[in-house]
Image 1 (cartoon, helix red, strand yellow):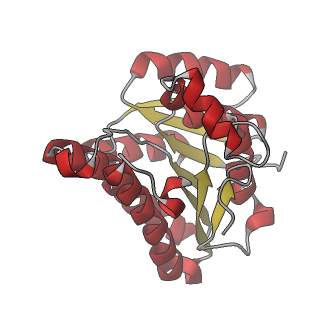
Image 2 (tube, rainbow, N blue to C red):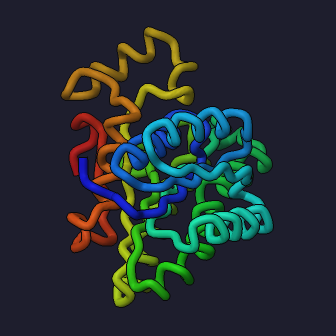
Length: 248
């Protein structure tokens, strides 16, 4: 794996799934990792695993939809590590339902966490990265942002917006040597997809040329690459990790 020795990373939505695995793989690659989510108990367990792999860990109890909690969380990170090299905007929720019957609360909850939350975190990360003239911001989008998905108008809109945000911020801060990219996972084996029936999972696999659902580690590996020095000439890009399900 690419070396991130000496780097400091913050991963949101780190308590489970892709975020959790990303935090572990970042640590394996040598980074010290701040892990943020609402479930402090799960974060504490993860922090023990990270330190067991030789990296420092910081638990940050934070709801990315709350601007004040985001500010406080980033303050903790900078107090602990004095810098931030990598931000992974991974926190996300779902509130599925057909658009014609979707409650406004369900729409706003998903947009606030999945899109506004990434914006708030990016705002807090930019000053320190711009001063250092170095940094990596990686936003976790989704294959459905590229191809749409019935029953997820709020989620698709938020993830598509995240791709747009990625491109806009990439252009704004490229002169400071800060890159901004997105990873768009396909259907990945995580707690978010565990709720699907076996029948639905088999139907999904039939739509994936590689014939399997992805793993959280498949996605984490792509994130570590974009966080590495080797990806320094890549910005504003969307890296699809979907087994060929969507070929742009």
